[in-house]
Image (tube, rainbow, N blue to C red; front, side, top):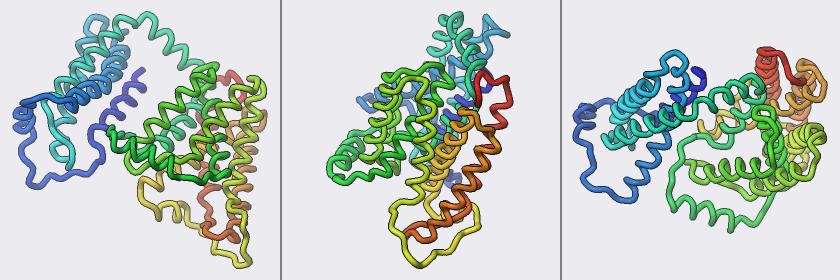
Length: 378
């Protein structure tokens, strides 16, 4: 529970201080700014902020209360509320030095209210929540949880939505005017969503098609509001294809089909656009060299996507009965060969990075799989 609390705190801190650009010179004293920041009038934007602040801090208050409830049953709710107040106060003072962010006393009040509401709910439902959480921790696959973290990072980075009707209209307009659809990208998206569904099932138990559809709607819906991100028709088509496959396939067939989808997606993505030239491009032996020639956010998204897809392929091969060293080694060699073939593909940059990503993910997945007696092959 304490690890979950650390994760929630990290999420709150990240969202509070995004985009992590600080300016200290010439800024006014933060406590004075905070004390004089109570709004003189309220509008719909202020009400929206109130709702978001309460919802953001409710998980913090709930998890903090659940973490401290066994040791301090009488004071856990008050301690969780005080912790929420202290964390919010720290974030509001630091926001004084982040250009574009506003130090607000109303935010401090509503954040504290959210933490108190979360702590209250945790106390009320603790007899049901605590046994469920501990049973989930005991049965969940740590390897699958790592894959889901990579998938969530790839889908939702930079994790700070800008909720506006303008962005929504722009996203809808882009989808309408985009008249081309890449079969390769659509198949890769389908393979990724299907692998994510298998990972969700390994963490949370049997996963229904309706739940998968809900997870897709939440993730793709949030993508619309993420800065520097967009939503392509291929992603919607891939999600629909994965959902259809999950619905029609019997549960015992999903694992081999998921492995086949992941491996075939890697193959077609590596060899697209399937037009070869006679002249070979140079092979880069510098890890991440070509990847980080892009902007920081773009490079991180690419790296997280590779980590998820390659890691999912290895994980699915292992669940089919192949040992981690064999599965990871075979995929790393296969990607090295495919990257070598990319020397004859126009517009591609062949490099050693993909094989190294496989090696790193294989080592991480194997280490996590060994942390508990496996319930099934991992």
